[in-house]
Image (cartoon, rainbow, N blue to C red):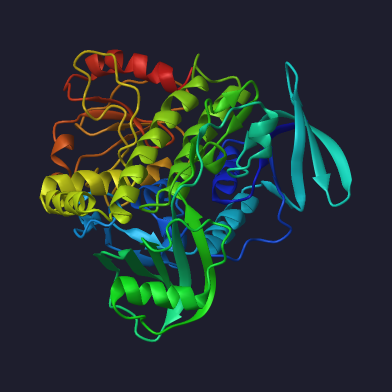
Length: 490
């Protein structure tokens, strides 16, 4: 019997498999496609995802293959978002084709011991009290496997989600945009955007001499996603939106995409869970889709591993749904707002875009939205403890350590265990098993102000801060830390 069966070898399924292997969980991934998908598809790897990969020592593998982009966009607002203000270890978005991302993640997962079986797909499942029986089709044959847990990472049409009876309500496509991965004779010097009566347009390099062009055109935004996009139309729309066609040639991928928006009513049904596009879908604005899915997997991996190995505190696995559904809901809301800016056509809508562009020119507003788009502002349920530190529940970012072996906390998290990091010079007594404990001082000039009085911080395996203290007394810190420790380990 398998510990875990994952359906889907996209970025989310592969990353989740590697996270399970980090904890010694037996995992098999089945993938309907017989070969990796060569399309670039999701090309924006946000700073939050790079920081997550850094906690496992992998970020540089992706950075070596991609193109750093220091700014981002919010819809068709003319003010760019400055990722340098986010406080991330990697303060940029990385332009990298999804085919390369999947290649690197599959190499990582397989090297860790995961099995990836291609040409196999889940067709049905039956849950029992101790396991799930899964019917798998491979070519013209069927077989049944048993797994203690099943995770659907098999996309918006997820067979796992449907077989588990998890509803996926929302709206169908009402507007479409278009995208083209092409070579250009007259490429822009950097990321380029344009807005006007004809709609909105974005262009950015994605590596290997290829640019991603994307637009929402008022003349074509009611075309269905099934209407083929031609290179002639791409040239025409680019000229209409930008004023020139940039010498477009040699298309790698042409597609229309819609604003269909749905979210699973629950991310768990018994022994079946869903993550990534199987759990949520929305308009691809701001390069957030794959990144939200990677955070789903990072949140789920250590929690399900602890549950399997009987070391999870009560309610730990339930917190996956409680934490990740609100996170996706927040992204759904901001992508809907971005679409309103992309599709602005009336004088009122255009005025709204201009007002928001002016608001984003204010440094604090710009920083706040760069922080959110980069993936560092996923909401968690409010901490009920009175006087809780404002770091509690936030993503780890902006913590620079005054050490040469670990200039940030990320290299200290390669093992995937909770990290109790002392920053005040005195060690906090900790008797909890399975917790890594380290001591360092904060590199104050490089640290965010919120860190400057922190003496101890408990960091979850998914780089969420479970607890932070400014107390100078180590014995009081040890006592105060106990409730937080009970949320991450037994």
